[in-house]
Length: 176
Ligand SMILES: Cc1cc2nc3c(=O)[nH]c(=O)nc-3n(C[C@H](O)[C@H](O)[C@H](O)COP(=O)(O)O)c2cc1C
Image 1 (cartoon, rainbow, N blue to C red):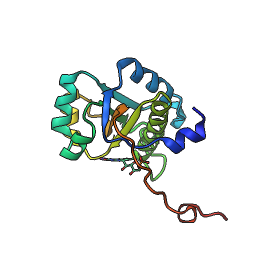
Image 2: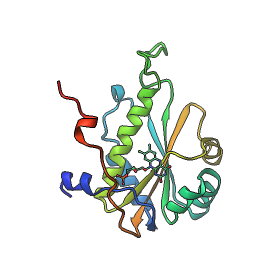
Image 3: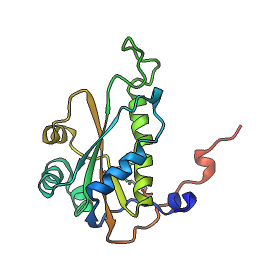
Image 4: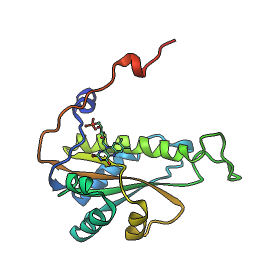
């Protein structure tokens, strides 16, 4: 799809018809890997939860009821980054005041690519930041050196989402 159309038509979807398949997930993660990253360290990770049993466990234990509802019939991607790497010197010191915020920045870029790659493949997504990271870590055995950020629902839409309004340009852009 034309890129402008893609970014204008992508929406967060809260009702799914079917989950993304393993092949679809592999394709969109491969494309998302083309995102830029700090010193090309590629510290972003993705845990794809596809089996019915694991999806049910993750949804019930790690998501609040409204996100459980919104992600029904979708596959779940847990996104993390390796801590104390991106934005840190070889000696393990933060290179500036942002510290591990750079890991989150890299992951946000990777996930922006991810949701656009999904949209281009005819899949819809919902990023969920309201989740229980401790439960996710336990269920998926995610190592302590990774920061768990979001759970992303991926599947095909079962309803047409509405466009959520954007702020006026002069509120978000200052030109000097
Ligand atoms: C970091 C982040 C966390 C979010 N967490 C949630 C969430 O927990 N539940 C939810 O329904 N939507 C969540 N959203 C989706 C936003 O509400 C949505 O992106 C925003 O309203 C704009 O709508 P659009 O994505 O359709 O353009 C999240 C989005 C981002 C980027």
